[in-house]
Image (tube, rainbow, N blue to C red; front, side, top):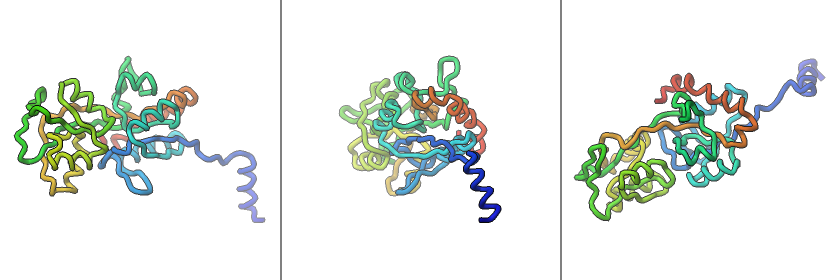
Length: 246
């Protein structure tokens, strides 16, 4: 046996080499590019890079899994995952999971990114939106991704909504005239339309809402590993600037 092999075995036996603790992170399956990109084998994109690097800075091995929005929220509330990426702040969610907080509100400094939601309509649509009122015809509705918080924004303005599985389904419904508009965050909607110019859509401005999205931890994980949780959050501001995320 060589001296180098013997030295390595000695280190292993003495407990010097350890696998990094696992951090199980769930991500909504409807989250689109450019922030999160889905393939058949892995997740990528700047938000995934940001989260992974933050975990690595804290000695953790981040592993990601896609889930539909409702299963994601339920799984996190039941501590079936350690954290979830890209969740906006909602009071009812904050009762079941842990956000980075400051003075009673989610701490925007520790966000993953900020997203503006806009209304997409066909190029020939005559719908008008002034930031307060949408002149939606009777029996028409606005499409939303199922489980997304923008639904609440629309309902608060008494705008009828119709849920679809994801942006692909909702843009298809919009093109077919089954919905009058689609409420989607601007970077994701713009990226999708750039890849599908045949859809011939336009945006109605101003945005419906701009909101921060967070890395949220399961209560059990945060209570068991508060230092790890705070460490990961603390890495986000500088890493977010390096990755040029809003």
